[in-house]
Length: 152
Image (cartoon, rainbow, N blue to C red; front, side):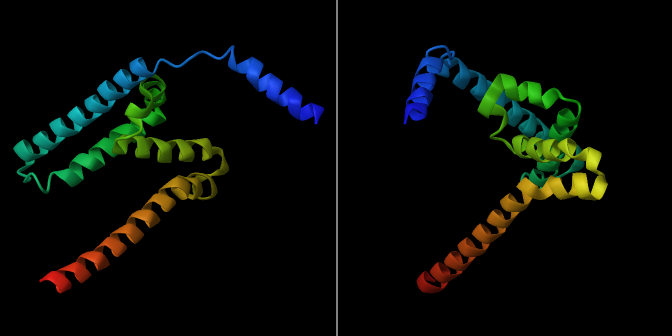
């Protein structure tokens, strides 16, 4: 029981020395960095529409792929981590945060080889997200089909 009290006392004492996060500044940084990433995405989409004759609907896929490639490269060079430390959630919300998490997992295990290190760990996070996305899409598709048949 005394050890439990010591742990509580330690946590209570340590909490007084922890710096208080500035939520307003953190939110502002996240807003502007996340907005800048989205602005870059919008500029890429306009580029694809203007120079490659994509429509607004079809320009989304190459725009997303380009953002993922840029984020993966920045992660590989160690730049995206610095952006993440500065912006917090602002760098995690867009699709670039997902690319960063996949690339980081692969880079951590590169010493284990291409197959058992990079390829295996690359999809630890991505696999769960892909499965959730496919299952969600299937469920929503069935609901939509049911509602269309019921109402239409």
